[in-house]
Image (tube, rainbow, N blue to C red; front, side, top):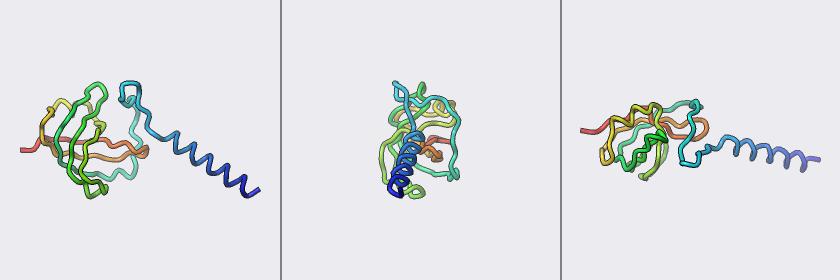
Length: 116
């Protein structure tokens, strides 16, 4: 009986985790949906814009280490909270940016500005 209960619990945990995973559409963009904010810790990074996906409301950045979240330097896509932020940057720009991690593990830029 205990084994069956444990197996059912693990199944529910696995299902719940899969249900919260982000799902991109066929174009690799995330549908417009409300942000599910976690404790909304703000993180700051410095990087270079490598791609801008206006339709998908996201930007790819090659950024340095971000200690507040324990990341080493890497290149990755971030969603943007406000699509107008993408009008202020161009590929090749060095930028300062602030972002949050949502409850569903998306990384969303709340502010981005060119350096200099």
